[in-house]
Length: 353
Image 1 (cartoon, rainbow, N blue to C red):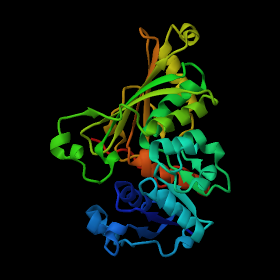
Image 2: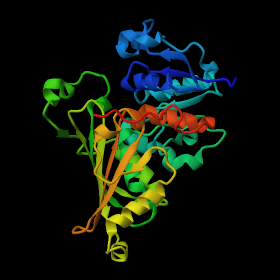
Image 3: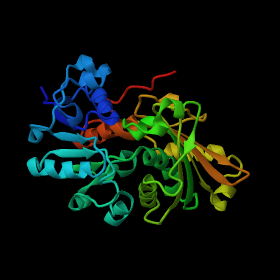
Image 4: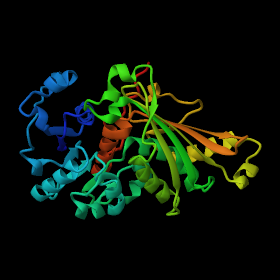
């Protein structure tokens, strides 16, 4: 019988940590080894998340057997994650880490420190692989031991714009208006996340600059073959527990519009379908998608269309911010690094309505 992949989770008491547990216990090739969560050390996981109580799992203050794990998922805040990654590699240099914080997403240390402050393990930056499989899969090697799992906003937005930039049919100046559920802000208590503040309300934030903007810029510049892409990014908070919708637009090239003037919408859908042909988790849909349609799943639904009057491409993209935007994508990366089908353990469809 083939041995299972041994997996431990650090930071299991956050939303991302709980979602990792929910998904990993259904993975046929995974054995959960240890769960670390200092705020609930010594307690049953069910005390923190009652929906996980039937699993009978417990939480430790610190991993006791890191070297036994094939993969360790880090669901910690930035800074803390880099410090913990460095500790783990000292104890278990052959264990692979999938980090769900922002600590290894930005390749340039100066850019990172502009947005997040001093980096606590900069020497690890050169070996970190950016883990958006649909765009960076070819960079995976047998020696990859550190994966920077993408942010939810960058995942949702970059998948929407990558085909058009790759095919050079839009100008490298993109506008992204993105809406997120409140779970993206974590479990911490904040006044603007209280029910009485959020109910029947929506708000924009990060108008002077958001930390995910340089991450989106890095991805799209890569896709655009190292030609700098300028990103205008505005995030919004919506009265949803989970879910993300991004409306992404850019000016189409006059040559492309002239070539496909008879039916630009059919042409743009064909381009997107060809770009993502064979991708399990990216679907090109024929009507504007809603966040409800991908709730609980690892799918990204894309609806590309052409605003003919404005001469602009408009793409609607939806994901579940806790699955494709976090835990699900992390498991997709684990599968990829393990030589398993990327969809293994992630085949569940969205929950609707």
